[in-house]
Image 1 (tube, rainbow, N blue to C red):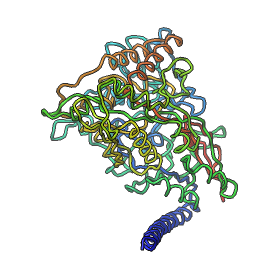
Image 2 (cartoon, rainbow, N blue to C red):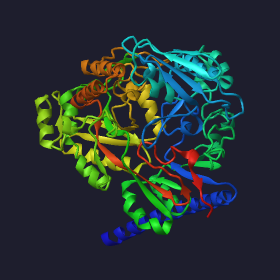
Image 3 (spheres, rainbow, N blue to C red):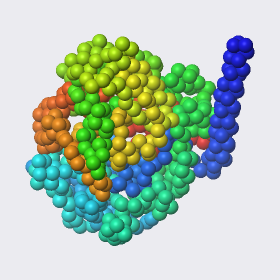
Length: 595
């Protein structure tokens, strides 16, 4: 009887899996057929994103993935391979000897995607009326603030092609910071900025959401938005007014259309790529060996960009505040999370080598710093950065020393006898996130902690982390870069994205009793100091100290840095792949060879 039941259950399980597989292949085949028909008419590139865009409003966006890299340019750009600063909307710039003044000269004849002229009026509007407007809650303001005074740059028009930026004191990342952000169209957005809604707030706050007709979004980048179907795709069309031309004077980009397929499941993405429905696919380690064997037959090449930019981590909600008298975090759990020995014990209990071996199939490295390993400001363990090698006995020792205890079932209790148990959130639909969450749950069970691993929709998680602030622990990722000051909004205690102790966003209910720790204040102070220092050796030491403090006090417990791997169809030419820029950073140069 047991054998018969087992056999029936097994058959049902395999039938369900087979049915799901057939359905996925059928769906991808329909998509493939549709896109092959369309591809015969126009050259296009189809790629996967795991989620939908959360906004079409550049200044208000706080989540990735985004459409902005395709539809906007800044005054300058960063080479995706070398990280060198290169001209973009500005053809040149002059920096004063004291590094307090930059004059950008725009290219002649620039136009927006609707054909309207793009001038220095747009630059001044973008900065003075949007980024520097205190009525508009944008993360960019944190990155642009300067020194102890937190002053903002002064921006003024010199003429239709020249615009001047000045700062009251030296600001080391001046050029990359002010030049690298997108410029926004005054003629399309001015009314929304200066007109209030019924609540007395600028209409801009709700302008260009994802419910807006994509064709009404005005940009300056290589592509424009053609259509958006939630949970399915975003289609980009070549911008006929884009400023770039090749050496022969031919307009760029060459590829007529980009198609962003929203494919939440990495397994479904793999099926679609193997069946020909996708031209690019970021590869999960679990898929690497399979796809490596298929490179020649499948007419694609796997690009290895080395260690990925950015970090992944878990973080605890350290906010001790209350809203309307109600604690954001259960006070019992808040005491655990705010106990340094607890966070350090959790770090020692995580078997990151097993994570590399099992989750990333050996295609990863330890991550011990909030600064990307490729950055010249990265401070390595070899230089003295503290690390938390797997040591569950050390973890138990720290917990016992902090007043925790174990019952006869080896369950961890606090000093008052409360079982130590918390919820770990992650984005749903990612096999890697699910695997990491399962291992974290298993690892922490070895030191008596019960973890309730709960994958949820990404938008819901963002709402909890940034709006309601009612969460306990989450697994997340932050994109990285060369310049540490780009993370100022994360590390300044009053930054717009300071997730482990988030202040209320503008317009949200106030928080009573929020506390900022001394180490937290010190990291924020050092980020200000680092932006003021122009001597590179001194800057490196300042940011090294921020990394020392971050690893000592663990607002983020960093995990593993995977290799950056992407499969690219051989028919796509001029790809210059890197971990920094990815596959599409030079999308204007890409060509699609006819089949």
